[in-house]
Length: 379
Image (cartoon, rainbow, N blue to C red; front, top):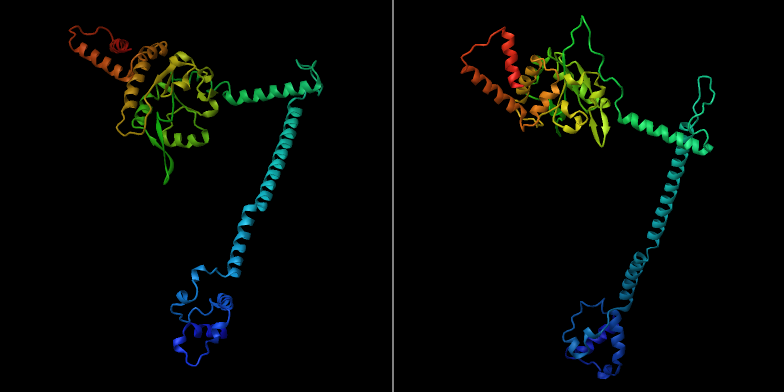
């Protein structure tokens, strides 16, 4: 403080009286060094024209101690981040843990696979527990177990892909019980009902218009079977709610299908019915690709309320049943050549009725004969 006061008095001589000018003899460098160290403390002291009379403050360097401390701290922090020693340790730990995980999985899979081969690859035994020779008995022991195990795995895969039983339906009823002469196999999804899903309600099934009409009119003429690839735990309650009168005879679900090339196929050979009397109604031709002649294709229903397809289908199927067709595949094969079989059937029926109006001759014979002639003309 004393030095700064003397310096201030030196820079303002017009305000000082009786001051010895010998003060100027002191070295200016002394004042410069002392001022540089204490300037940050006494900046509030007004020093007019200080830079012009003494020295330029812009040429002075910032306090070396403060600047050095700040820069050294920043440099230390930047150096620690860029160094990455902790990151390298974490990365090495993650790689080591991954190696141990893969090693554990490999050992586990090896142990499980060995156990499966030992269990499935055992030689067959008879009722008394004696070993029975098979086609692998002459091979080395390790090869016998491997080949038998692979054979068992393949058989299990085929068991999953094929229907769960050889006879999907029980044997036809015999007298005195009534067995309908024809079998109608219906797909459930997008034929009888359409599944819908929303955030508020989840999955719901919308009933197609005309379902009740079709079931009531065809129940005595056809043995009605619902055959779908949906899982039974999901679809059984829905079918029961849809068919409250119990007009559907049987329900077949996913376990009754044949899984081939990513599709659930309905194998009619296991249906236990005469295929000349079986009609399958489905929108997906892939699901009946083993028996395309028994397939009657419908357009996939998307849930519209103005749909009248099932009513037209009922008229078509009812005509087939009342005509006593020997082989329904001939009729289905004929109508399959048209783009819209149901519209074609309706047009043929209208044309026949118009021709009958202009015919003068009346039909001869019993009324049933005229009905059969009508149906024969349509089919």
